[in-house]
Image (cartoon, rainbow, N blue to C red):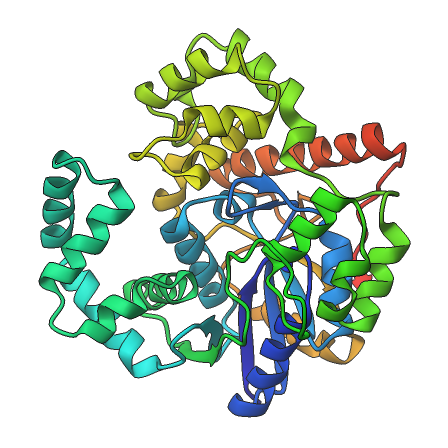
Length: 406
């Protein structure tokens, strides 16, 4: 029996996600689909728009058999960390046969060749990119110019310009580095672009970014109705303005307090001395989390990089903590957010064969964790408490963790 996994955020769940699950099952013959989903914080360096259990419920309602939470340390890490942690976790379960991901090109052969090329030429590409940065280009532009200079195939250059292709390349690199037996499989991304910020006037496919933008800017759900499956939209309607939306600006006061009171911000993961100086100068005149990012952003540092650094500060994620990740070979622990009853046999197989411990509600399920894993998990527990505190303050709701069984 084949088992496929999808690495995801579902922030929020939409028609494109349902399509991905359906095509994965149809094209791979997988009997079971595991969704490895970010929890209450996501890779662009923000809180998820809605609580992880609600998003897990949506996934289970629309084709996923099991939803496992991606540990915080990878969920809000840069793309290489996000991919490395995701692949290491799936490989450690010893039940996953296929990793299915979306891509703009839909060509697994091209992605495999490009992944090998990027890995083998990493040092040359970085040296060329550094030369272009010294000439005044932004780092993303410098990387693009370096690839154009070295790549023997223009199709590779075009593929490397698309966000889902780039993440797919990181997955393939991680599979190769872990010598995983998991086979990569890609589904062509349908219609919408990953970073679209406006809902399309027609059609049923829209990006999660566009759906979030519609909810956060207009404060209404109606525009998202055609882009979200019926059961998922029902959850959105039922919880809207009761315990979501949550945004990064809900954490602004805490962020400003940390920047003003912490003598050394470089203790936090991904915060350089240059970024610390930018933050200090910007915060006095900034009214919010997003305003601080806008004032810090320049051609050498992206919006997402700044946002992730600020989130690491808010959540108390230090560089010393992050150093533990590679020492643990990115194999931390896993937590099941929800599952369908008929897939309980697969959970039993995980518990028997997995080489990482299972946790529940951010606590060990059986034996005590190693000191390193316990330290990382304690940060994750506090981060979840903070998210629920924000929900409580904003919507006057008390949230309790629960495992969803369908």
